[in-house]
Image (cartoon, rainbow, N blue to C red; front, side):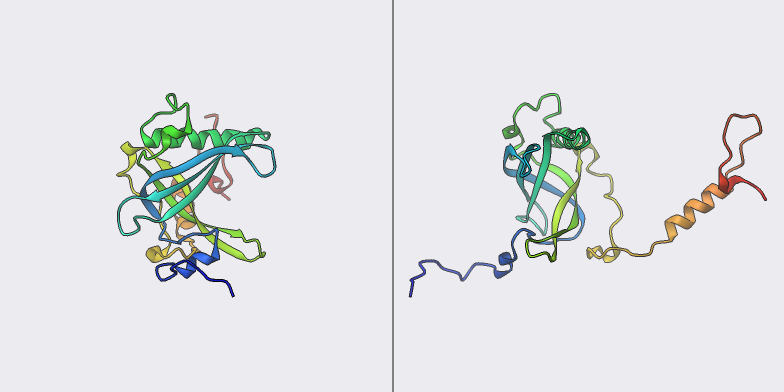
Length: 193
């Protein structure tokens, strides 16, 4: 028998699930990057900035959210998206994209971000959930409301929301058709029988 020289009284057994972290309501939060490094991605197709953030205020202060941003990638689209995310993060922290020369500059610089829940396949093949950063918010825009949330902010995906579709069709149907010779192409919903 092996002696355990650890105290498990204050350990949360839910952390044993691994990878996903604590799931909290989708919303806008103030975060800090606690640690991060640039390293080669697992497929050796580029470099990514891998980091750990922590919520710094409110009911969920202390909750960790992990992130990855492509810095370079052999696929130009992936690289373009990653560099845009890195620029948005630099702006959100107040450092500014033109001034960011080292990822260490991002450490402990508070920024707002909209968090969401992402479903992914775990190592066992089963579906798991984790918190992800959907959008970095520049401090000047922090008072704008976050995107609409799921019902009761309970992270349940809304399956059937026909309200927006109906509103869009109604709005489009009330627009006058373009005048003949006006250069505008008539759209199918604007055509009269």
